[in-house]
Length: 135
Image (cartoon, rainbow, N blue to C red; front, side, top):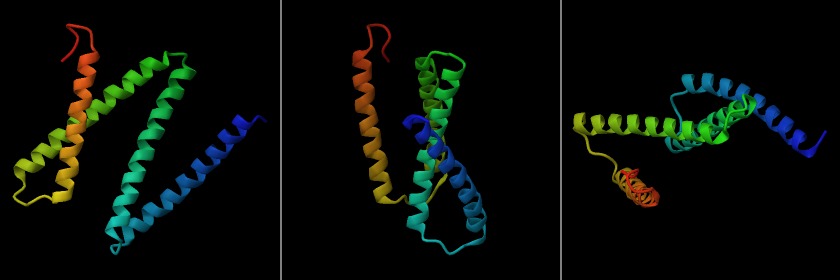
């Protein structure tokens, strides 16, 4: 067995073990109302990142197995991320419109900073597009 195969087998074992642990944790979360909110938030963030990474790797493995162009798979994944982001922005906009409550200041600053970064990146991407293809 090569080093690469050993790592793959080790990762596969970890994934199986973690899937079993997550199933158990799912049952515990459903029955425990007394959880530390900060820890739960951190867990949700980490879980979402792992889920997106697993999905991306799965799609790239699919492309490799079916002998598709990996760049086409990456383009598909980017399109899906854009679709997901667009839906989240629409949902958040609806929340802002319908909610009569104030929003946490730190969360609003983080959101504003994220949009500033996105605007800068979109500007740079637009500048690198050939004439007639940019936004």
